[in-house]
Image 1 (cartoon, helix red, strand yellow):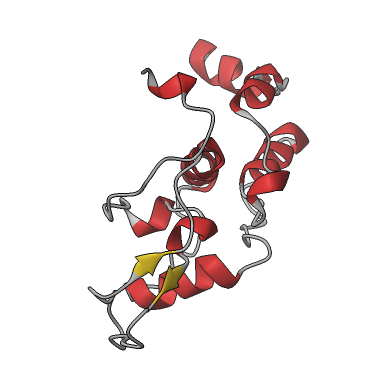
Image 2: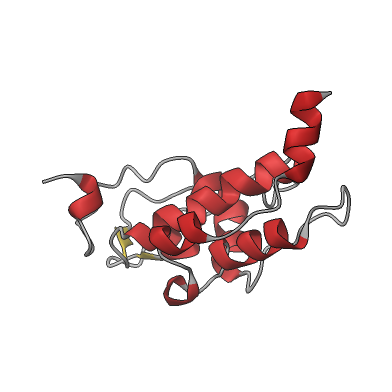
Length: 142
């Protein structure tokens, strides 16, 4: 089965990927035996949510954030456990005020980095969003 055909959730293996690009729901954990290793990801954890394409939309938003601002969301946080808690607990992702970006870019960022996966757009919606690319064309022609 092709990955693009997988419309539902799939079981997670525990290999989540780079925490900085993980959606909030992919970082939710349960500790069935009550053990939570302070400051680290516990080997006793169980994930609350399985993967979905909405998690990939968040990751795309994190990449787009990096392209727009030359930094990652929550870049100032170095500790991985604190980073996971910040991503999971944030209602929105703070972004730099500069450099200024076109409103269409900010709309895309806000949509893809929604904390609630149900509010994130589907990939087909993202691909149909008009983006202001005039500054890209100007840079290429210069």
